[in-house]
Length: 303
Ligand SMILES: Nc1ncnc2c1ncn2[C@@H]1O[C@H](COP(=O)(O)OP(=O)(O)OP(=O)(O)O)[C@@H](O)[C@H]1O
Image (cartoon, rainbow, N blue to C red; front, top):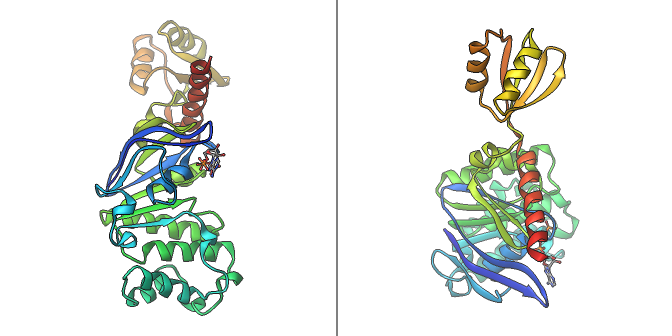
């Protein structure tokens, strides 16, 4: 479990993270979203002790990173894929990290295998593609078999096979009961991977909710209706306060009412229905609405 309490980081006049309080729970994948510059990487750096907060706390299993006696056994992080020294081999890099963290060398072969790097373990890291470097970063994060994992843009540079591999790995790590905190700008990937979402903007919390709730709250959820009497149905839908958009002569997209409400209304007025299909909002649509609103609020608050 990761607990943030009023976490704040200022760089000069600028607040990169501004009073963030939340709990990132074990046994699920928590997706971390926000526009460029929202403060995601800074938050991850504060959690992993790479930067010190201006005020507030970031706790892993109840303690700040600096108080962990064997940090890599408690928290693994992929924050910068190119952080390994280019002159080392992949195996040499992992052995060095294992040694300095009191982790048995046996774990090196295990994570090389897990990350699909066994065949290139003797190659210098400097010759690695971005995708191979991402895999090495993930192997390093998993080296101490930690209960808490942070991944900042882990699919960056991976090919479609690699993207699927990391999605399945991340899901299995959460299924094992670990705390997994994942940032990505790829909304479709996040929609497939995360159980819970934390959205921030300008360093402040915008949403902290199960992904289903975030999707459900979008105004882009609608119902597609086909009827041979569109004018009659439109009149009744509009007078019930719903919004109607025509998509074809006999077809309309209705928002502001559930499938059941629309079906019942049509039945009451004797309008035949040929199709009634829910049109679910995508995470991208829900996210755009959430972050657009936050910008408006931020601008209003700044006036
Ligand atoms: N070392 C630093 N010195 C000064 N400002 C910084 C520093 N690190 C981050 N910032 C600023 O803090 C804000 C948050 O940056 P951060 O990198 O955490 O955002 P992010 O959400 O990770 O963005 P992205 O999606 O682009 O990676 C930005 O305005 C950034 O310019």
